[in-house]
Structures are given as C-alpha cells and as structure tokens.
Image (cartoon, rainbow, N blue to C red; front, top):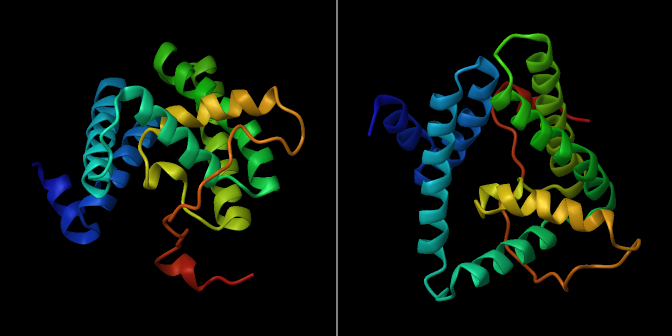
Amino acid sequence: MNVLERLLEQSLGEKNKNVALAGLGMGALLTGQKLPALALFGKGFAGLERHWRAAHPEFAGNLEDRWEEAIRFYEATHQEKVNRKLHIVGIPMIVGGAAGLLLFSPFRPLWFVAASSFTAGWVLNFIGHGVFEKNAPAFADDPLSFLAGPVWDFRQLFRKEGERTSTPPTVETTPFRVTGPAATIRN
C-alpha cells in the first residue's frame, strides 16, 4: 500500500478510500496520464467490488446474477425525474468524454473537447444526485454502476415515459454529503 492509499484509508476508511481512488483515477484522465489514471481507477474499482462482496455475504450468484443485481440497484437509486433526465444527458457525455480522453493525444483540440464533455457530464450527474435525488452516486455503493449506468441510460432512451425496466427494490444508499468549507453554504 503506497502513501496515498494509507493516507486515504486512515482519513476516510476502507470503502471511501476506494471511492476516492476510483474518483482520482477518473480525474487523473484530465492530466493526460492515461495508464496511471486507469491504474488508480482499477484499484479503486476492485476495492469497491471486494467491499460490496464483503457487505453481501448472502450473494452466491454468478456473473449474470451480479449484473442483474447491479442494474436493479442502479434503477433503485435513480428514481427522481430530474436526476434521470440529467443522467440521460450526462452519462453519454462521460462515456464519450472518457473515450476521447483515452483515444486522443493529450492537450490537443479534440482532447480538450473530450475533457470538457467528461467534466460537464460529471457535473450534471452530481447535480442530479446532490440537488434532486439526494443520495450519493450509485458507484459509492456498487462499483458495477460504472458499467450499469451507461446500459441503464441506453434503456431509458427506448422506453415509454413512466415505464420501468423492473420494480426497483428498496435499497440503502449512501447519503450525498458535502464536507469542509462548502458544507456551510446553504440554499
């Protein structure tokens, strides 16, 4: 475990350390350092999946069952109408932006377009969760949400208003919290 990981674990705890590593990995894409960014993201993702499995010892399914569980969880954590609409716009921006950040040479015009799309997509999703849904993004509780999100988004485009892909279960989610100086700002 390196110094950054130890510092994160001591200050945030194991689960939040992994959320931070995944987030830092995504943010590091904006530095142009592709492999270190992917390594940080992968380390956080793997740690979140270990945490998920430890928190769900009753889960004994295969990969397909795990995927269906992730989709159900994602659906359950995206119930607020405005948040859903923000995700329908934001998720393609994130996916397209991430692809561009990985494909284009850093700090060239197309890379900046990808970086802008990636950043704007995340801003939309965080607004959706913080202002409207009032819960943390799903990946804080289920790492497969990084993949389930784009699949869920695609399904949203092809279903009728009000129709659900499944009946969402009641799930316990991490609340959306702001800490530090920004926490004192009130609407």
